[in-house]
Image 1 (cartoon, helix red, strand yellow):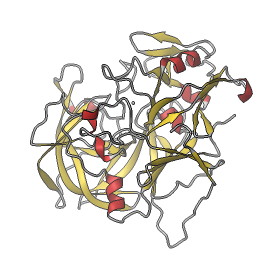
Image 2 (tube, helix red, strand yellow):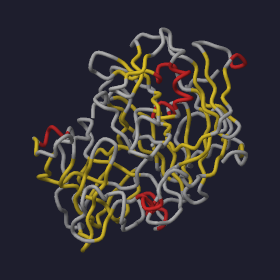
Image 3 (cartoon, helix red, strand yellow):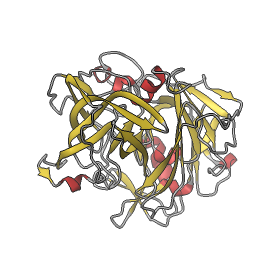
Image 4 (cartoon, rainbow, N blue to C red):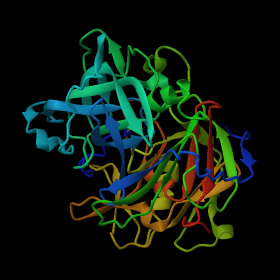
Length: 417
């Protein structure tokens, strides 16, 4: 999820070793069970939720699908909503979660002497850890989940929490019954995230999940958002081979954030180059910036947060040009502007953003570019590059925690030159 909060504009962070694999779709036989779950796109296609069932009494919720964090949390009955600016108690509906909240079922078992506390870019959530059953894409597992009783406003009006899909080293259980909220990044009691635990218990065949996000209208409030698939590929048509890159240890992440070990935490890799140019430019006319940089990919972030040396020249190629705003730490752009061409090299393929995905309507009467500078948007002293939702809408992404690699292929309705 977001490591940053982009001021007030939101409604609510291996070179040379890439491989290209032959395209090899496997369609399930009739007797096989498919583990694909459709996603719901909200807020104009910037947030993506999945249906889950929790507890012995089959309580149903929608959770935000987030590759940028690792915990799965659900809001509890009677939770307290806290204002993000001064930590004052506000009305529960101001947290913008959906109307359903979790109540304790007969399969609930609280973990003794542990608590849950996490800091996202959008705010904080805290509560308890417990063993409970959860079903996603027709896969049911009993595992550790977080149940939040306090939260800043972080909902989309529909979801009731978040499905974390990062590595175990980022999980945010903590020893004891209380953790100060300025230490949520540290002193972790590491555990398996939900999908990892499904594989460990033999409930999915392969140690990976895959995601394909759909394009939706900017003014849509709820629409089909694509798929998340467990141990298999989503049911979409692919038009390229897969390119494969290894998951890397984030160089800029302090060691105390990852349990005092240099270990994989985010779904990170190094891009060797980006390509950009004016609207409708041919590929051979694009500027190619061969400066490599490390980033991670995040389905829980509406923006791509990249080096200023990348986003500044791209944003000047909007027609009319986008203009940087110091207060917002983002580039204001005409909502009807003609977007430039922008692509990120992954392995030996280039994945281009669709033009419409480069403009974000804030809902406040103006639009901003979805490309923002990482040097200005992050925790103090920590510069992290992120590819967010705009990157995902033209491809299938496979997250393989067994091989510690990611695989990407273009989809038939995606944008490409």
